[in-house]
Length: 314
Image 1 (tube, rainbow, N blue to C red):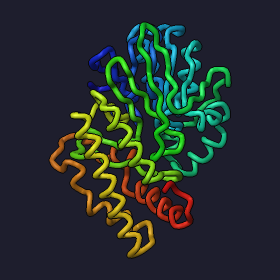
Image 2: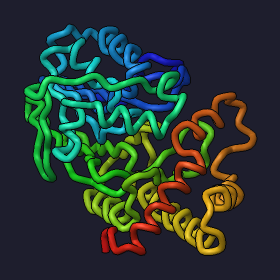
Image 3: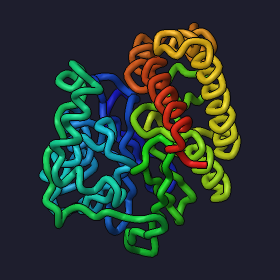
Image 4: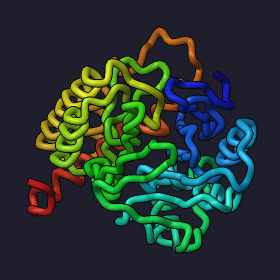
């Protein structure tokens, strides 16, 4: 697939958001149900690809019932206001912790601009406000009725971010995990953890992975990008890789508490995450954009500092 959409089992379609103009960076997943539901929409600057994909699938403005966002980072939720405007009957579903930032995204946009710098204007773009009556903030264990007996179980799954949720499709056994399992993009050989600042928490991330294993999903869908299979083996791999990354970063941090040192150590240790023989010209660009060594190092270092202050999960 080069953009557009891809048919998956159980009435699920992957819509390529074409983030940064590159294929298979971030997926949106459309569930074909009595109340059609989109999981993730990508950033504002590329969301028109998603809107066009939905229209190509025959979705009229009044058809989309729900947009479910795993969390409010702009590579997942930045285009939510645009989707809400294009599909005025859709309810935007997000963690109750992050819901207010979609209603008034000024703080979200400002903090994102500090993190992304120039990429804010070339890759992401500002999230636009959504009317409060269009936003449904959900807690752990709530269910979303898609009609015809199909329901999504919504789970609070912190670790990557405190406002992260996952969606489990009871009907198909599909688990949509956002960034909480990690990243595996075309050209990557292993699942790579996603440990960005400001609120990554290692203990909570492992607990979330344990919770997913207990669900025994039939398929696990990453936002970045697609299914990882077999699901239990993939979740175990994600667990082990997270331990390795955190352990490597912590040892480097103990040697020299400098970002460059921790970043370089991770880059040397995990260079094999990327297939050096891949002929895909966008491999490095995808990985650097979404799960670069520096971003992961910053999140882990902040976690170590907060843990030393007693401000992390036990």
